[in-house]
Amino acid sequence: MEQERLTRTLKMNRKQSRRRTGVHPETFAEMEAVLIEREERKKKSGRPAALSLAEQLLMTLKFWREYRTFAHLGNDWGVHEATVHRTVERVEAALIASPQVQMPKKRVFQEAQIVYSIVAVGASEVPCERPKKVCRPDRLPFCTRQQRRWYSGKKKQHTLKFQLLICTVTQRILGTATSAGAVHELKLFRQSGVRFPHDTAVIGDAGYQGLWLRHRRAITTQKATRASPLCTQQRQENRELAYTRQGMEHVIRRMEVFRVLKGVYRHRRRRFALRVQLIAALCNLTRACQS
Image 1: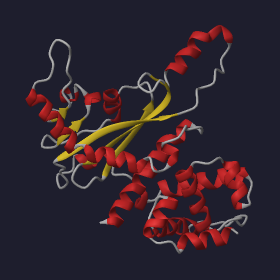
Image 2 (image 1 turned 180 degrees about the horizontal axis):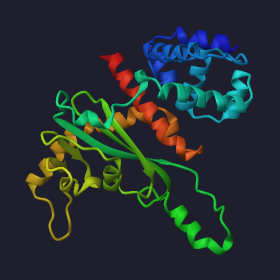
Image 3 (image 1 turned 120 degrees about the vertical axis):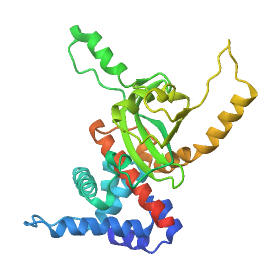
Image 4 (image 1 turned 45 degrees about the vertical axis):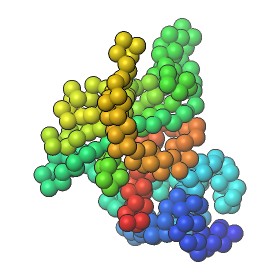
């Protein structure tokens, strides 16, 4: 049954494969080659796996794409849910360690031979389960602060936040950063530690007001107040800025095609940043296959 599922997936065309797994067949082949290379480097084979490498990769992609529980995936693939958990983490570790599936380093912005004219920055929030109060009742205020750390006033629920840096020309993701939902976008940008050349223009939405204090060529949306409403020219500038950074919204949409970044995140939060990096790298690979 598992082999038939893999065979049907491999026979799909590019559009059907993208809708089912989130990646094109060429991207699937590159990821499978990474797993095969890692398997060949092993000195000890160990116990034979219940699923082949291609089946393990397909199960991991379906976990990202559909974000079903490990118990449901185990029932479909005929293995225990603990096996699914180990398989997904093993595949993620192999992909994140490969040079083919990695994000550009922070120093790429400082290299003289690579100069991006316009870079867009944006953030999105993913709902998560409310943190449990595991401390003692006499330390209730501390527990409340721990829960407030994940509470987003914008979404009115506990969230995780991820930030993207993209090139507006190629829509290639240049960097990622993650934090708790209560962290402001501008603070998250400062914590990421990214530095741009002086010739690079950075554009952001209204959440990045004050970005020009860190980078002089930063442009953000102008906000109106009761005392000083926007004039016609300012509204026109906001429209032009929104048109320039609309590629950011398209990239976020491609990221959220994988439901692990769209639905309620219910797994360990320390793996959230790793999965954001992996899915961003997959979006870059898929974009390269399209071009």
